[in-house]
Amino acid sequence: MNAIVKIESQTPFIEVELNGKVQLGVNARDLHRMLEVKTEFSHWIKKRISQCGFEEDYDFTKVVKKNELSKTGQWVTEYFISVDMTKHLGMMERNEKGHEIRKYYIEQEELARQLKDGLQVRIGKLSAQIELITQCLSEAGRFLSVEGKQTKPAMLKELDELIKEAQPSLDFDQDKDNEK
Image (cartoon, rainbow, N blue to C red; front, side):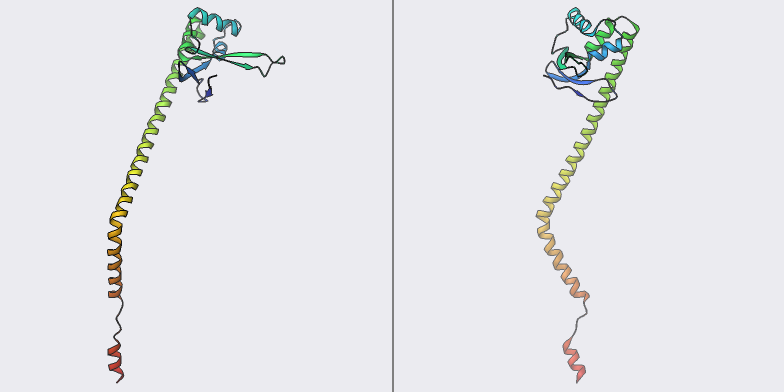
């Protein structure tokens, strides 16, 4: 069974595995409702699949699940269809709703692509920043391991010399001369 996950609340899309790859898809039952088709869903979808020669696992995938709302415990077949199949079915209804649906899904598909492209740009920028930080830290580590071993002792020696120079010297011999 293919994994299906809602991806964005503002889009009607779901992720569905078709033709060996994960892509955007739509629940056919939602499309049927939006198209205001009078025919019962299961008859309508089976007829359209047959008429158009849509292929399972290429254009659509089926998921059979138990209907929670049914008192008899009926099993329901859900059809998850590609965006292209969605647009095709919208046009087949040959009504105003069908044209609206087709236009709507084309716009939503573009929005989803823009969202995906925007995320990819952000991922690229963040990856570049992480790479730069990694390089800087690596160079700093190299500097400390090589230069730090030489620089620190020289700096400590200079610090000691400055401290000695800054401290007043006490000349004990001179104090002995003053006592006499």
